[in-house]
Amino acid sequence: MRTGKFIVFEGVDGSGKSLQATNLAQWLEQRDCQVVRCHDPGSTPLGDAVREVLLHRKDLRLDPEAEMFLYMAARAQLVREVIQPALAEGHWVISDRFLMSNIVYQGHAGGLDIDAVRKIGEIATCNIKPDLTLILDIDPDTASARMDRPLDRLESRGDAYREKVRNGYHSESQSQNTILIDATANVEEVQSQVITTVQSLCADSLDCSLEN
Image (cartoon, rainbow, N blue to C red; front, side, top):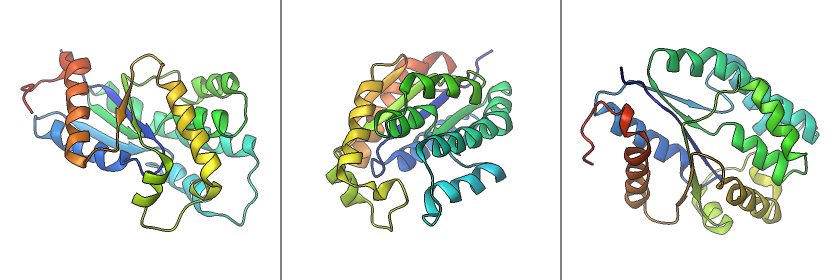
């Protein structure tokens, strides 16, 4: 019996994660694959409430440790309520961010102990790991130019922080089942890279033609 895979999109804000996650989900659905999409934090009532605090309540002070634990709490609920049940049913799960975001934003860029964040994350995720993590890589200036909207709490931390985030993703790109994709290309070219990667690494779970 073929089963779905757990695929995560990561990268700096403005790299096109949400769009490419949507495009991949649609590509899979066109091939009769059952797909569940989610974003982290969010996609549950608890997660959405925590997301509002984390990204938009700029009036609240959030120290790095508190910020990290709030992300973990939202993720724990996401895993239990959405990801685990979907994978148990054999569905594909495509998530806009997951644990790597915590490791990069609060660890590499925020100064928390990276190994400690990773270990706490193992508890929050019930040790569920993505089958494939796609890091969309783009320089901070290009990413900022693409964001035609008010910036959230993390996006407002300035160029030095965003550069640390990008460098953190480069470090984490050496992780198992992780691919770094050039996101400076146009949408269609990036989508082609994403689909080619999924075809190559997840072909055993594709109940469909491998043609684009």
